[in-house]
Image (cartoon, rainbow, N blue to C red; front, side, top):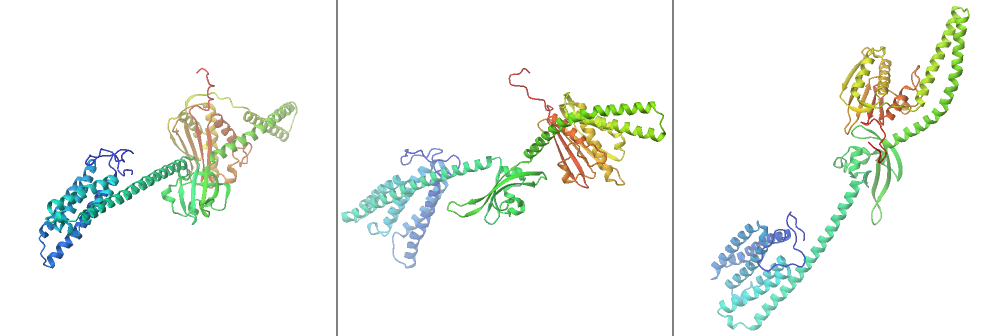
Length: 558
């Protein structure tokens, strides 16, 4: 049997201890301690009930019983010795000695009771049998045989040496008592050994079950996907560690609660699907999940199992790849088209300017020709910006403090007309990265201009607020946050704001945010946006410390 306390374990198989041998540290099982405690209590109860009742009976009936004084003394001695044993049980190292002593005490008590109640005529001879049974319980076969031998030897000595009529006792009496002792020892040892083997098998099964349970727990908790189980009544019964991290909910918080309250999208028949989910931390996630019934071993449905995982970044990467593929295709077509348009556009513009310089025109005709030249120039500028967008962005990386780059951009922006109707709140911390400073200034400028336009479009008597934050990212890199209190972006438009030529402004080109995303992507960073119509928009940029520099090839010189 295994020990229930640290430092206690069963003796190795095949070893044994002789009577009186101290139990070595780590060898005394907790079960022996428990059995000693219970047998001590049993002995006290037996002495109190049997001997105390006999003494009370003789006193009440006023019968002459010369051994009454000895009986009272025996009861008192039993209490005192049991108290001593109870104290000795505190030293677990000597549990083996205490067990041997308790067997001897049981035999001694039986001998004393038999001696004061009539020797061979005593009705308490059966107490020797109880001592043998106690020995089997404590020390199994060894204890039962030792107790039987000591009990029979004590009985013979008691009758032959102390009983005045002992020599006249028929040999059959000794044979009967000896046989009873032997049979009791055999039966007690058999049952004790069966109990021990059953306990060992049970312990082995419990160990196997504990190992399987631990392995199952380790597997379930090590899975990176969330695992949720729901019982037949629709209540949450389990949520693994990955599920807690994704949802922000703890198992103790949701266990026993209706699953509909926390996971309404996961209810229903077997299916595979995706759903939008907002966790406790307020993060908006895209979860993919599989729902299937939890079937009992003998059939019947116990509930439901849901395996789910966070697909937010994967779906964002897929959208970015699809957008990049569309842009690449659009770029190839548009680049050729733009070149073809710029040449005749330049010819037309030059021709108009030449005509305007050589002809005598009225004021109205001159104004019309100036409009043509101005619009041609604007169209040429648009083509130039579009060509710049379609070309790969060459980065001039260098070590820089992004907070300083952002501060310079804010300083210039604060003196521009766009910042006249806004209030800037800046919280900047140093964040060292490798980046192209000029292109990052373009990113910050575009985002600040967009924020100012959104604030101005909302109107109001008080200037709107633009909050700008910059700081280091745990693990290296920088995080920039630009939040405004403007009109916000409709949820239907959020997925399109980085698409070239998509704009909700009357005079916008739809290339500003597309260029911002291209620059951040070229730096190996990530840009995300969160917006609530009527309340404002927040852009978050995360730029790695290496600025997206490609890793050196294996074996390349540093």
